[in-house]
Image: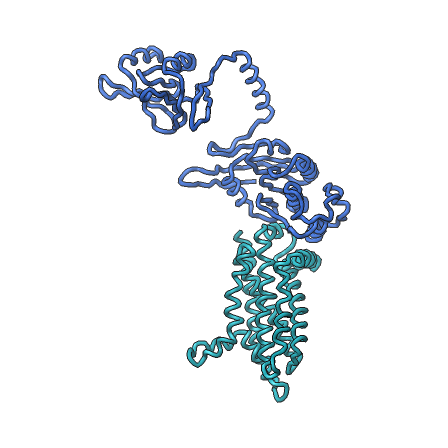
Length: 311
Length: 237
């Protein structure tokens, strides 16, 4: 399966993707709404791909049994309705009209359309999103049976949904297309938890914005400034209020490579790209964050900084 | 393109069940019958006019509106797109739907004609004209359905059809003031009125054949346009 690259506003929006899909394999791609649409729009070949879109709805006035009968006939399969109803575990809902089903059951019945697809590849958008626990299990069972003959591609924005039934999971976002190693990440998490227990001393910097408390890991922070007595923590181009004083922050962040470069500034040295010399007595530091951020540097601190950086 | 009667029948049965339970649309079946009952008391001299009004209004409401609703509803729920990914071809879908509309229209119109007590000059010419007209208006309904995304839009989109086709015989009265309206004489509904008005005695085959041929030409053109548009529109989506 191949996807052509797409550009949007002059930036690469969708990289070129080549998926080597073997039979009996299900692949999950975690991505956002727009990229999901773009991916599906490229799969136009109706003889190869069966597309199940999230907006798919059903013939509301038919009963479940009538719908299954219709699907069998229209796809010219030689299966018995009663047996299939058993297989789908829909015996109790046999005579219920689709509009009277619960929303989870209705979605489940709608999803059954993929069972009747004759194409070798099934592409499903958000299959598990509206399903309750029991229907999820049922649909996963059917999907697993389908996998014996077909390949499945699941497009979702939710990692958990992808984990339910995918052998390989990829993440597609503005940073490109990368495979997630599910097993490794679980082990990593456990290690991180152990570390947290070991030195439980407060590492996070707590800030406030719109009455919400937001905690940042020190490496995330670009720089901290003090304006009119209030402390602003700059992260990724945005700023957040902090209740601590600059002196307290300086002590706490010293071990993380932060540096008090000015009476009212602390900067994350990991993010400094350039030391700008304006005149003999005035200097600035340019950061390599997304937005062009420049932090003043006092003359008295210049020597300290040079010593720190061994220059 | 392969046509499978089995698949077309499955679509026919499915649409019949859906339609019969959709009371908002299926109640339209009663409209021609009610209209016939009201106009039944018209004096015999006006009977030709009455049958013309009943048929020409019913054609827009029955085959045209119902077909537009059937297609628009499938589009609204994305089931048409899903049908395109099954072995069912465009023709299967269209034949299945059109047959249902045709059968219903034929039954209802027969009942209305019977209620009115109209006796045509030639029963064969009359039946042929009705059959051709039903196919013609079904094709018009298909086009309306393709240009609307929801059932609501479909019910509005048949208004142009109603104005042009049902209104054409009425427009003929204005011919003296606006000579350009002479074109309206060639609209199938005007031809149908003309055919209905042929007296029971003293007509020639040529009298019958001319309106029939004009209606046939309309039917063939609209049917081809609707099938081509159908395939074109569905590929875009």
